[in-house]
Image 1 (cartoon, rainbow, N blue to C red):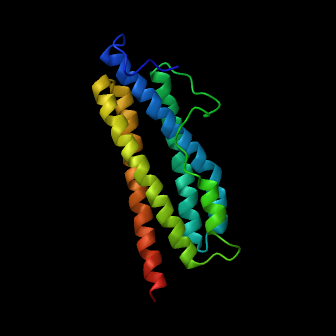
Image 2 (image 1 turned 180 degrees about the vertical axis):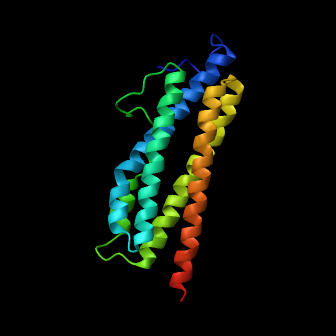
Image 3 (image 1 turned 90 degrees about the horizontal axis):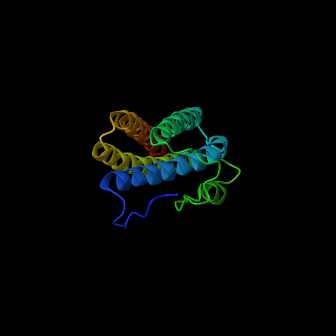
Length: 173
């Protein structure tokens, strides 16, 4: 599937494209995992605004998946149906099942928000790396698409942090 990243036969452009494909697929797989567990997270939320925030994360994740498909198409790579080859796993469903009981609370909301902030932080780092690769590949279309996803991830993380601050203030009353 991917050229040997260590080999001498591939040119620097091929190696960069291979990295762009590899990490785009990694982020795609993570987004897919996130979308699978967000409904469970929303169901366990205590406050309506936290439920709405989780739903907005879901909307943004769908937008990012679309942009990742565009990037992969620009790289002439078909999006696979399965991500068995992906090494990254966030064990998200395990997080939900092991951390939340039948009685949601404000404390539960704080834990969920912090968890989502950590995931968004991971995505910000991934998009920063993809942005660097897109610059090296000299693909304006890919660079613009990655930049949009990076800006969305940064904004989502900031929104979640603001909501977590409010959640913590509510707990301390």
